[in-house]
Length: 200
Image 1 (cartoon, rainbow, N blue to C red):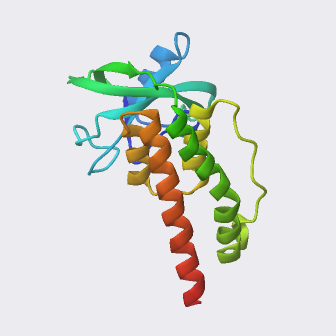
Image 2 (image 1 turned 120 degrees about the horizontal axis):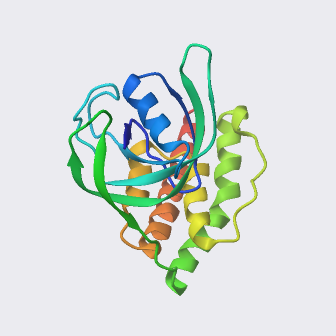
């Protein structure tokens, strides 16, 4: 397990630089096997401290590329593969360990698909408003997956949600609830940006 100060979502890229001995050992243990570890968001505390309280729902990270530097540190890129729930933390020996359950996402119903369509329709509006506020955000709308479940996560990422809002998306009990939440958070983000523009 790797507790971090961020929320990893399925499909999201996670670049890391490993330098602590415990995580270098974790890397050595998994790189030639399943290449996976769990990521959970720290509720409070710092990443280098043990036994920080964390959220129970996290994400499985799959290493897609890595390299070892001359100083022994490791640079890697992992991709979020799926959600997990922590059932029990085990003694850290030598790195954090937990008993976890992999969580499956249920299919979107017609109601969920309507929420998803509304969210997709909001994306160009959101990105145009963000570009007006900050020209660094002036990028074309990216390609979206053909998998509706993955699109929900993509929209959460593209909307620039805060960490704890991303965690709410990850924790949503159903895919319909997740799509509705992303749609709602996107609308709130558009409204907030528009208010900022009016104040300038």
